Amino acid sequence: MASPSPDSPTSNACPSCGAVASGRYCANCGAPLAGATCASCAAELSPGAKFCHRCGTTVGASASASRETRTNALPWIVAALAFLALFAMAAGRGFNATRGSTVDGSQNALPQAGLDDRGMPTNDQSSGIRAPDISSLSPQERADRLYNRVMLLATEGKIDSVQFFAPMALTAYQMLSPLNADQRYDMGRIGEVAGALPLAKAQADSILRENPNHLLGLILEARLATLAGDTAQLHSYERRLIAAQKGELARKRDEYVRHQDDITNGLQQARKSLGLKS
Image (cartoon, rainbow, N blue to C red; front, side):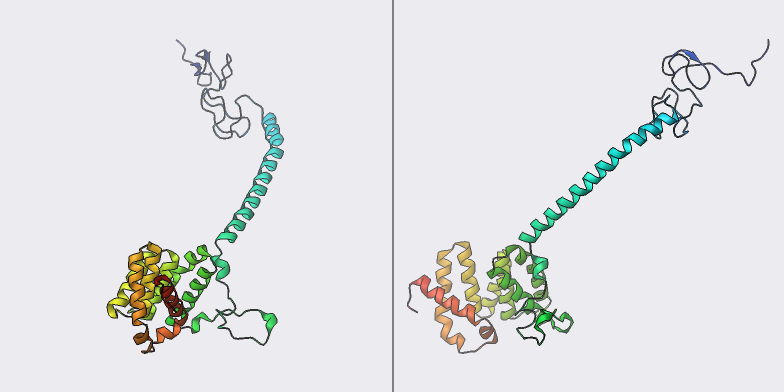
């Protein structure tokens, strides 16, 4: 009995239709058999596959038809990419505009007249405001600068900017440890306007623990009692503030000079709240 020639095609069942098939494609259904390659990218096809696993070309499509399909789709792809680019540009502009109108921290980080130039006039008015020389500032001066900025932003109602700068300011003050009453009052005020009321309360308590009659500690406690809606505590601190006024002002503490406006306003508010004459 003669053995089959090595060069004769081997018959196998088609994985797609089950018919006996030989060669590279099934004569019954056209499905690829072992050894069939993609007409577009020449990748070897899996037996029975309907699409090329590499380029996605339909099995049986000619190379010219595949290239024509890709060529016809190219203008649509370019148009889609252009549309996406324009949409992203428009969205980016809208996002930046919205952020700039609400969170202006980066804008307020720029030098400002009367704050970063220390109010000193320049000979060349056209040169604008000079940037502050941060390297020449001491740790206390950096903390003072940030405190002034946060308070200015708070009075202007720029709450988002206050939230932007408050953590920087608090960090600057923490680096000054151990803190004195003046520094604790500054930290307390920053905490107050930034909404960190427990931190502000801790600073006020620390001031009064060292000196129960300290005017700034009493003023800070009164402000926090107002925010908490605690009228009884508010009036208690206001009465203590008025009683301590004369003796404490006679001590001429440096922090009283620095925060003279806060003390004046605090005393006026206390007298008004308690129904006392100025």
